[in-house]
Each structure stands twice: as structure tokens, then as C-alpha cells.
Image 1 (cartoon, rainbow, N blue to C red):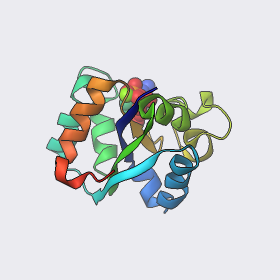
Image 2: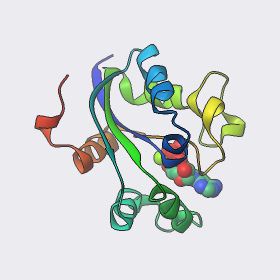
Image 3: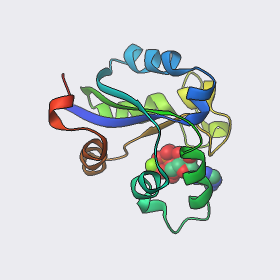
Image 4: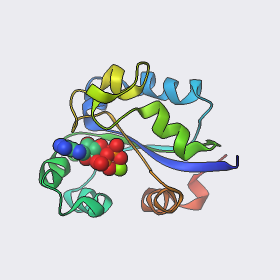
Length: 140
Ligand code: ADP
Ligand code: MG
């Protein structure tokens, strides 16, 4: 399998509870390397654009409000099959369905406040990485 890069976001519920380090340890334990990282506060326009694919979903407004409710940590993770591996480490969207040992099982508060975002496919990963990082800011 090829080396890939994927976009991760540690969401406001996790930064609020000071879980950044514990979540990054899960990535590193799975063989994913943090090759870019920034702690930021998303604007409403940023959050709406980033989650644009979900614009028509009933939870869209709440999701945007949640994502701007506190700081987030945006990161690029690199590794063998990083996109799928990150999704595996994250666990299912709804923590009630997430496997033991996953980030969402251990840390998520709800289906919305579920601690992490991860790109779901190669094209999404490329676009989401570009949304937050210049090539120069990613150091593998
Ligand atoms: P994932 O983050 O696992 O890729 P989705 O892309 O389907 O999940 O949804 C994006 C985000 O929207 C989720 O991580 C979660 O924060 C929120 N979300 C998804 N489904 C719901 C829902 N039914 N109710 C409230 N929030 C939701
Ligand atoms: Mg998704």
C-alpha cells in the first residue's frame, strides 16, 4: 500500500477537555505521523465551506455552530494507507457504534461532538489538506 496523507481535525469538544495529546498518541501508536499541525479557531464561513458537502443535511447548522464553538487542531497525517488507517483509529461516526479502543469510543461525547474529523477518500484528502495548508507547511 502506498504512503498517503490525510486531513485530521481535533474538534472543539476534545480541545475543551484538553485531550489533544491523548488523541495524537492514538495516531502515532497506529503508525501515523503528524507532518503538519496548527491550532486555529474556524470562522463560520470556514466551517460552512469545509462541511459544504453536508449543506442539505438536517444537522448542518448545528454542526457548523459546534465546529466554531472553540479551538480546533488541524493536522496532516502521513503513513501507509493513511486515509483508511485514520478512519479506523477514529472509529464510527456515532460513538455508540464505535469499536473498542478507537478515539470516538474512548473520547466522543455524542454523534455530533465526536472529537475528530478525518478525510474519507483520496480526492477529499487532497482538497481538505489544501483548505488548511500550503505545501511548504507540510514536512514529512
Ligand atoms: P464522519 O465525520 O464520520 O465522516 P459524516 O461525514 O457523515 O461523518 O458527518 C460529518 C460530521 O457531522 C460528523 O463527524 C458529526 O460531527 C456530524 N454528524 C454526522 N451525523 C450526524 C447526526 N446524525 N447528528 C448530528 N451530527 C452529525
Ligand atoms: Mg465525513
